[in-house]
Amino acid sequence: MDCLAVNNGGYGFQTSLSEVGVLVNCAGFNNTSGNVYGAPILNEGFLDLSADPFMDAAGHDYRPNNIAGGGAALRAAGVGVASQTNNEDIGAVQHTDPAGGGGLLIHPGMDGGMRG
Image 1 (cartoon, rainbow, N blue to C red):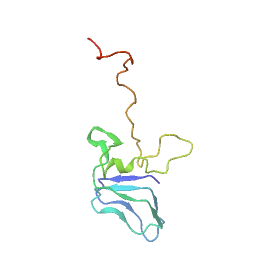
Image 2: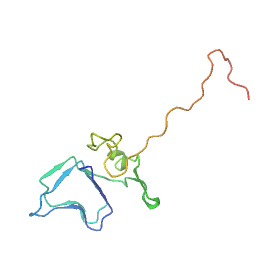
Image 3: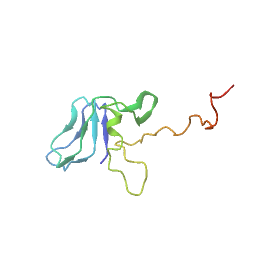
Image 4: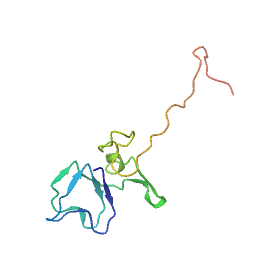
């Protein structure tokens, strides 16, 4: 559940006739032989990604990026765990949203802006 297989030298996920395979909300990208081999008994919500899903894999930052067909498809696509919060992304590492706020507050009585 919520697994991600990327850049494997074979298949991302593989089952055989003697195994019971279950894939729920999983995704794959750039696996040499393909993303899924065999016939999992349940394959629900699998995502075939078309772009690298990581922020910076070379720099060991495995958070999902915001690229369409990549990390953006993983965000909030997972099942999550009821006892945890902020764990709805597919993959082991969750994305972080930028902090809100910022901007400049201007008093309504200030005509003409601020002087510096």
